[in-house]
Image (cartoon, rainbow, N blue to C red):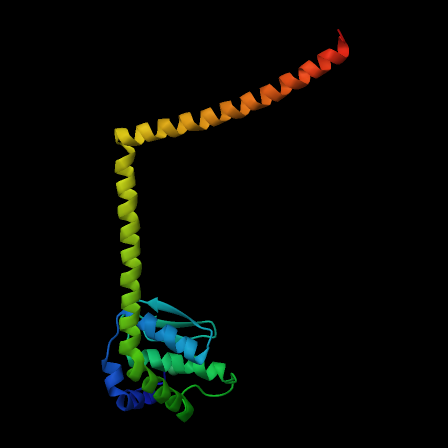
Length: 187
Ligand SMILES: [Zn+2]
């Protein structure tokens, strides 16, 4: 929700931030960090084109948004969090001052946030690649004679231990059988 006059003015105040475009990944990172900083509840949703929008449960932002527009909508979420009433206006001096604070934090921290997030993604990607590599190696190994031999050997071991258990049980049963035969036929 943006009134044209207010928005024009805002674009002048935060000129650099409205010029600075973010990738969706960067938008997501900055959004999450500011969300945990201000503890608002909105989720982030992207759309193709159009402006931004803040509802009580979501913030909608166009793909490849600017930092300025992102901060504009987040400032609304902060207004809601701070108890803005439905009859109070959205685009006020208060909104501008919240936006100023948001952008001060974002300008200071965003590069660090984004590069840390990129490192995390690379790490996760590396782990997945290694897992996939291991899985591929195992699939190859399953086709080799060694694997077949190993499997058969394991199977033999399992059956031999079953056989041993069965022999033990039979020995005990035979002992008991003799005892009871004596009781039935004492001589
Ligand atoms: Zn607005």
